[in-house]
Image 1 (cartoon, protein in one colour):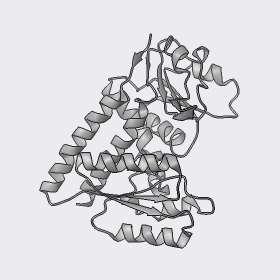
Image 2 (tube, protein in one colour):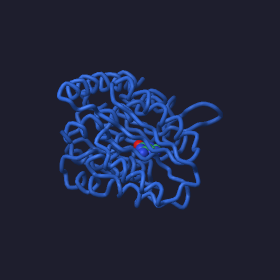
Image 3 (spheres, protein in one colour):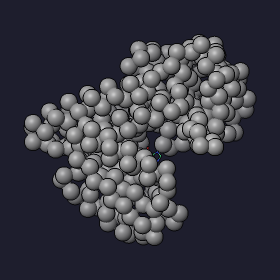
Image 4 (tube, protein in one colour):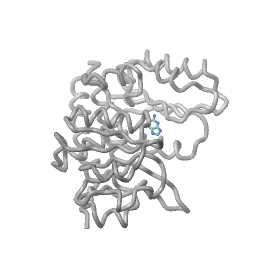
Length: 280
Ligand code: GUN
């Protein structure tokens, strides 16, 4: 049976260390601040935003929530982003995705000051990551790497297969693994013989948004399996990996819930402290 990688515990450690950093910044007269912008009524987004506010309170970060109606115009949203860019209390700005239809996400994300871009979604930060420069890195991918570091899993030279090529997870996590000197393959819906590709992986990262898609035959015995999926199926949360069968062959595996999920918010706290530190 695979060993579980306990994301809740690791995330707690990250939050505790961030709280120490936030307190040290306060001593130096810098009170870390995060603004979260939520447009519309997406129920999952509302839950995430509430969890982000709670985490801020726990680590001592000042937080503001800006809730805008579904009918918000592009101009109104860009004006708010401009105000937050200019606000010295705010070191991190997070615009919760998805935005309502009709608002160009790239335009909005590109308006955020790259120094306050704690999501790492601004094209400048995406570019900096791709050329291996130090930068603010998307929270879920950063959380995946942080988990493996803290579990002492070696990454260098390992064969990593990433299933999924989204801008939020697949592409940035592939870049991060490359920065860690792994050999990285990115697979997607058009990949031929997905199972055979996945079976090559020493570390398999799955971020496709399809419940229980990865089966035991897709996994090399002893591999580390990181499940980024969070899918609601009949009232239960399930990952993209068929946990029961895959955990019989994997060496280590992240559960859902309690795996990668808590790491995302912990890394958001850490990124906010990093942005505040760099601004002072
Ligand atoms: N929606 C789903 N994941 C994320 C994330 O990491 N950041 C933001 N801003 N929106 C999201």
